[in-house]
Length: 125
Figure 1 (cartoon, helix red, strand yellow):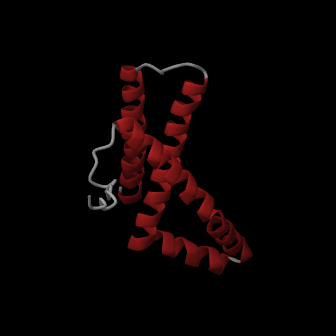
Figure 2 (cartoon, rainbow, N blue to C red):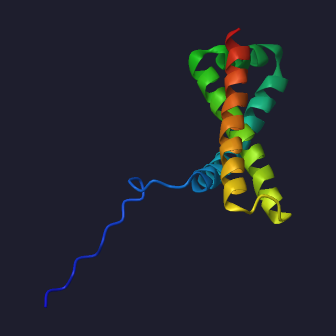
């Protein structure tokens, strides 16, 4: 009898349920926001240093790359907020049924995207 090779499971090829996607993105957005805290504090420090430093930071935020990064931060914040409210509802015993769980997962994804889209419209209006 020959030894069987280990089975390689490619998680990127498996279609995850919407609740899993919302939960994974909740963790990823939280990690991203936590990792960006030092950069936010550095930007705040620079903006309070002098008027020229504030104007330089403002010019960077108005650039194309700055707007894309800011939209990413806005999405991460919005999604983390809505998915966090979803998880708090679970802690309170709300929305634990299969259909309600799917609905709240879709809501957290859609609302996070909607807030980001509104912010993008506000940036480019």
